[in-house]
Image (cartoon, rainbow, N blue to C red; front, side):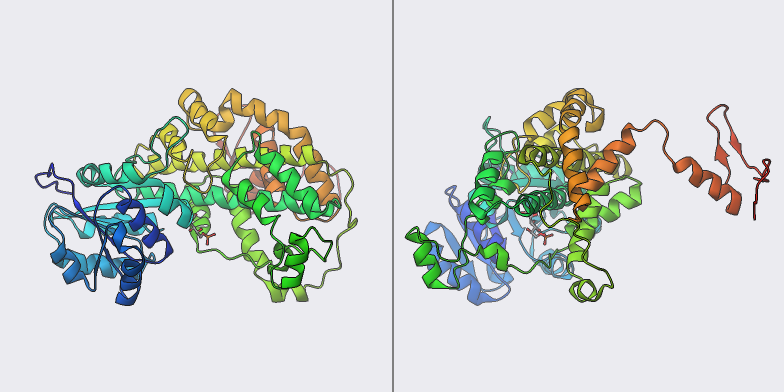
Length: 491
Ligand code: 6PG
């Protein structure tokens, strides 16, 4: 994008889109002492937010004309609205109202391809555009998200003081915000973040299910998960899982009162009453699609995504002409330490597959992503934040983009493999579905196997399609008639 004469002034700031995330982000920015102009498509929401929190530094505007008129150039307009047509419509309206030197930030979960296109729509207007992944949910937006901006460099430099001030801080004090490159690079990084998130959430769900199937009560499960969270498995997702395992179903007040009094009332976990149909807004799907497009085997991320879809096929599950495959309702051999090893391995595999995809995407889309820096800005604020991300950033710095080639990561995976394999085998033997744990193990084993059975696939392709094959003992490509040379009852 053509960079107008960059202003040295701090921009005036607006947030448009005041649902949970937008309102939280606006309050976070206002908390830095800056005035934030707020706007929502429905003015009532704007008025409610200003009534409740205006004193924090929020100034409401009922429409875009008023919003822009209230702001001094250069203007920074952060949009926290649904991806797709709404952001296209908003950009169209802002394009007519903003001046050269102003900046639009799409802070939603947009498809990176749309972001690339939208950047093009603003060419020649002098209006800057950033596509920014924002991770951390409402609490993160309010208290400190991980921010993944990309687009016009000059636009980032105008927004940087604000973004750095509101971003989460890693334990070394570094803000979890970095300029990631041009065009859709920021939304790409957020997309991959969400793919890793799907896999990590799936692995945790499988691990907790195995604890439950192993006959542990809710307090035992919660205590084990809290113990895991206190060690190298420490992560936001495990932290909230431990919290979830401590929430009794509050529909029956008498039960809650009794529990609070230490009673022994029927302590149904609220979790046990949550429907098991997993939803998804689509970011995991985008990750799997991109991995297929680039030929990157992000198998565990894809499995986690497909498993959400499978869980939602309630009618088909009910009508499946299948018997109860659970051989053993109480699978033996499910040891919490082995399960923890499986969980750690799955997180490492999800991260390895995610960074493999980021490396492939960076090359395919010409972004030159700084992968160690991506790992660093995921150390706090975002949903996949975990203790592992510091060593992961170090491994990326010292050993390159493919974590499975890092001696430190390989060693840790090898240490986890025996327990991971025992857990996966025990689960499968007992008929407990573990798509994340098993797909991650297959990925690991395939990478460690010298000769894969895919040679037969090459032979089959050459038989029916003359697609040729390569040989192990000489260069070139070959085709054979595959006429049997050994006696036999060949068809
Ligand atoms: C984040 C989350 C967030 C995500 C929603 C819904 O990083 O804060 O990833 O952006 O979109 O939590 O995600 P799904 O509906 O895809 O599970």
